[in-house]
Image (cartoon, rainbow, N blue to C red; front, side, top):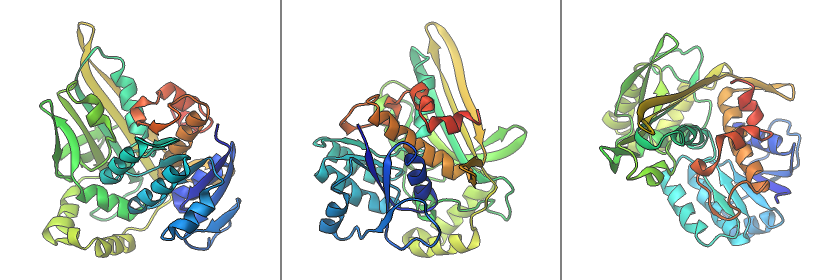
Amino acid sequence: MIKNIAVVGLGKVGSLVAILLNKSFQVHGFDSQPLTSPFPLQSSIIDISDHSATLEQLKSFDAVVSCLPYKYNIVIAKVAHQLGIHYFDLTEDIKTSVEIQALAETSKGVMAPQCGLAPGYIAIVGYDLIKKFTRLRDVELRVGALPRYPNGLLGYSFNWSPAGVINEYIEDAEVIANGKRKFVSSLMGLETINIEGREYEAFYTSGGLGTLCKTLEGKVDTLNYKTIRYPGHARLMRFLITELILKDKRDILEEVLTIAKPPVNEDMVHVYAAVEGWQTDRLFREEFFQTYLPQTIDGKEYRAISWTTAASVCSVVELVSQGKTALKGYLKQEDISLDDFLSTSYGQYYKNQM
């Protein structure tokens, strides 16, 4: 059972993760810098480059949730592994997840990366549809975190980590195509999607499938994840990343995009999953679609991308604490029941808008 939780990284999402978890657990927040806005929980400064000090600060906790940028998650994962406590994060980075999976082979607690929106919630939704089939043909997963009122040619606002978005656009995406597991270039595979009369585009990005390719290898002809954006976004990002070769200067690209496309409060998250296959002897297609909007929590309104991400990882933490998942080793998102997920204290935030 989990009682005490450390939340490392108190940015837009991390601070909400800590606030939500504090409803059910004892939570202490950690960040690399002094907090500039009021925070209702106890918090401390942490320097994760100091391994011994980090071990000392986290040794009294039952679990740690890392809400740090993707490149720092492995540091916290190694500390959790050494301490023998449960580990959770929001990473979309495939390399980080592979390293954590290796740690999980000898872990005393659960190692659960990829617990956010995508990867995370979308895999839980998709696998819930998959379980309705006796034989699969195609699985399509799509998520878009977007401004409700786009401006400019990019039609985008960075409401969460610009570094994470850039990493998804640069690193290759894993798919299953013609029955074979492979990697394809992100920002490719462009398609048009019509959602309730409005046109969007979708394209491959890295990390959204989590471990689904490994889970479904040999069982499906087509499996892919694509990010939803307003039309023209992929072409402009390919220009910046490939033609201007800013893929080799990520810090510059992050700085430019952060200044050019600041966050907005009015955002939305589209979640779409479709599965085709046979239900006994009948060929059929099952679909899930939902749009999530900003939501008021404890009197404060949170952006859709913030609460959907935070509520997702909090739901997984609660399920582990309740013993409804494996209690040690690597936890795949598709091993989590959608019904169980939605029945948690935090899954209720999703149900409020379904």
